[in-house]
Image (cartoon, rainbow, N blue to C red):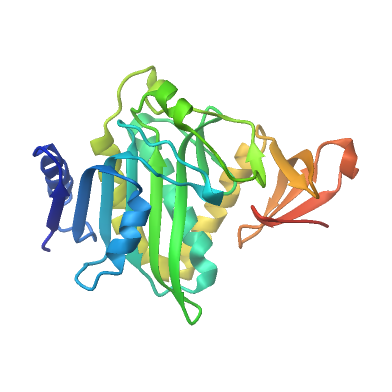
Amino acid sequence: MIFVIKIQCSNEKKVEFISNVVNKFPDQLIFKNFYFFDSLSSTQDYAQVLSKQPDTTIPFVVMTDIQTGGRGRRGANWASPKGGIWMSLAFESGLETAEIFTMLILTIYVISESIRSYLGIYPQIKWPNDILVDGKKVAGILVDTEIQRGTLTRVIIGMGINSNNDLEITKSQIIDKSPSAITINYDIATLKSSNHNQEVSNFELVSSMLYNFSKLVPKLSSKLFRDELRQWYKRKIKESSKTLNYNFKLKDKEYTGKIVLVNDDGSILVRNSGPSLDNKLIRIESVFDFSSV
């Protein structure tokens, strides 16, 4: 297997980083091209442009030390200072559009398992796609797709992981300009701060994630494997729901509730814990869609 490494940087450290990842798993990674920069506006945006170029080989990896225009779900700005892991992966796919949520679950699984196996920490999963440690957010995920005739032809997965980035700088950079459809009362953390302030190895985390993606993405063609992923996700949401309360808006009013059911398509039922909705269940199809049931 031939790996073409494309680097834009001022030194050889990034070349060494990627070379060591490739050499750690010889002939086991599905990624053909690697791009590792000092700074990008957004790895996700760069990956989208790159994926449309005819000479680009997919799957590929885009990483950067710093994002100046990182984005999250619902258009939120994502703080990406030096020290964290800011990465996007591009895949070709033949899955049905209904499996977009499965790609999201796979990414949550890979990040969570990499954290667990390396640090011995069991992360919480906050619906729909935030990864928390001790109730504080350490990672977020963004999925962009190309769809033709009901089929996912291309999937780009963006990941932001607060590993060793300065916590105070990160907090100061967080700006969410979008209206809050559904939020949760949580703070942010870094893996370093959750690891007794001991620096964690970005190399080990990235290596683990790329290896697990390489091993598991081909298995997505199996319905049994997709079902196993959904069951894992439901268990994780059920576990975290014991301690996490969700704040949500319905008809311009704010309420607090707990998730009581996660459906296969990712929609949820939330039971209002305040008096204003008389303990009714609220069905949430997505972060933008609220309807009482």
